[in-house]
Image (cartoon, rainbow, N blue to C red):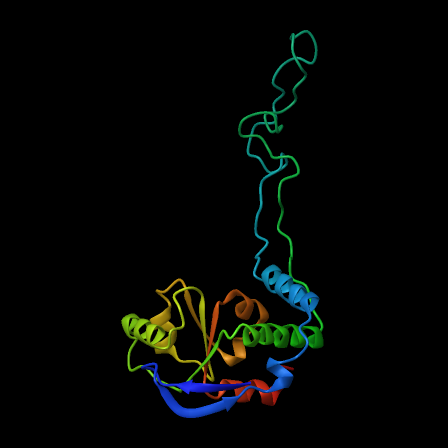
Length: 209
């Protein structure tokens, strides 16, 4: 697949790049994509949810009333769950959500995701650019010039750029990552994939391993 490299003003640079078939034109594997996305989302969870059970509630242990003859149910502690301020029954406790996935499955999933974007003609190749200072308005102008759309645009840079990242941080529909951070979820979650020229070569060289 051959694409025109665009300048930041949206005009063609005169250069064309070829996307490697072993990365951008494979037979997609939906199940691999599913497994990788599930693993990614699970690994984002901290698992810190916690409620107190009756053994952790700070209440007096004094028996509320006599065992019999009170005319009501028997109660032995204000820590019981039926009382306001009592412990919770079967509440959440801290747990570990992380799980592992084979490297080959993850590689297949990423290549499948990139293939889907190529099939949808949702990939734009942009010539390398820099920003002297974080300027959200400047990044918005670039986004409009290259017609990347205003919904879920993912910029993939050859290396980290603090100014470009900070320029995008205030834009909820624009995400900026480096090629080292690329993952299946980020690719599938984006409507448009903007690859800064050079990223496609890095992906091809690594073969997404």
